[in-house]
Amino acid sequence: MKRNWMIAALIMGMAGLLPGWSQQPKARPAGAQTKPAGTQGDSSGLPAGVKKIKDVEYGSASIGDKGTRKLFLDLYVPEDATGPARPLVIWIHGGGWVQGSKSMSKAFWLVPKGYVVASIDYRLSNQAVFPAQIEDCKAAVRFLKANAKQYSIDPSRVAVWGHSAGGHLSALLGVTGDDKNLEGQSNKVEQSTKVQAVVDFAGPADLLNFNDNIPGYEQNPPVATLLGGPASEKKDLAAKASPTTYASADDPPFLIVHGDKDTTVPIEQSKKLEDALKKAGVAVEFHAIKDAGHNHIIGKPETDKLVEDFLEKTIKNLKPSASRPAAVK
Image 1 (tube, one colour):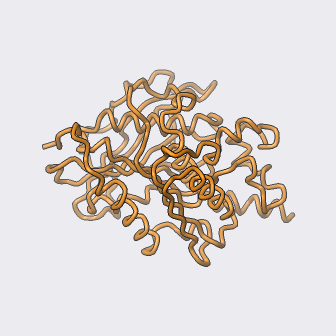
Image 2 (cartoon, rainbow, N blue to C red; image 1 turned 90 degrees about the vertical axis):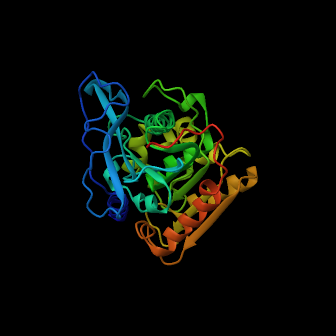
C-alpha cells in the first residue's frame, strides 16, 4: 500500500499534459512550419514585447509500429528582432519522460532580458525507449544552430534548462557534447550539440541508483518505461542514461537547484551529480531550496534570480562568436 502511494505521488509530481503526436510515416522536411514564421501563437501570459513562433518542425523520428512522429519546438523571440544576435536558452519539459509537452515552458520570461527561448518536444518513453529522448534534444540543438540567422540567435551562446525529467535531459545533453553514440537520426543537420551552460532543476542523475532512499523505487513506471525495464535488469542502459557517467573537464558550467523536501526525485540525485562534476573539475553551483518540494522550485523569485544570474555569468556576458550570424532585420 505504501509503495503504491509512492508510485502515485511520483507520477503526480511529474505530471503534465500528453502532447499530440503524428503517426504519419512521411514528415515534412526539417524546418517546415505549420504556421508562417512570426505567427503569434497562444500568447496568454507572455511578457510585453514577446512573440511566440509556434510549432516549428525540427525533425522526425520513429515511434515503432506506430509510424513516424514529427518533432516540434516553439520559439519565444522579441517582437523587435533588430540588433545583435542573442544567446539562446532551450527549455526541456518534465513529466517523468512519459508525459508533458513544449507548451509547459517556464523560461519565456527570459526574452525581455536579452535571450531567445526555445521550448522543445521529444519522443516520450511510451513511444520509444532511451536514448530516443536525448537524441531528439540533440536534434533540436542542431536545428536551432543551423537556423540561428533566421531567429537572430548566436549559436556560440546556448544554454539548456529543464525541470525533473527535463532536468535530467538538460544535464545529459550538457555532459555528452558531441558524443556520437547519442546523436541519433532525428534529423540530418550537421552541427555541434555542445552547449555553453546547463540549468538542472531536480533532475535524476544516477538512474542505476535512483532508489537509494525509497525501497522499490527503481520499479516505478517512469524509470522502467524509460529504460524498457527495471534499472536492475537494464544496468548498461541505466548507466548510459545517467549524467553522472559522463562528467569530464570539458563540460560546461552547471547550475543545479533542488528542493530539500523533494519526495519525487531525491535530492541525493543532484548531490551525486554535483560531486561527479566537481571531481571532473567542472564549474558547478548547487542550491538546496529549504522546505521546497519537487514542483515548488519553478517560477519562484528566488530560483528565477538564480537562473538569471547564472545565465548572465555564463552565456549572456560570454564574448559572442566572431562568426555569429547577423541579426534578422
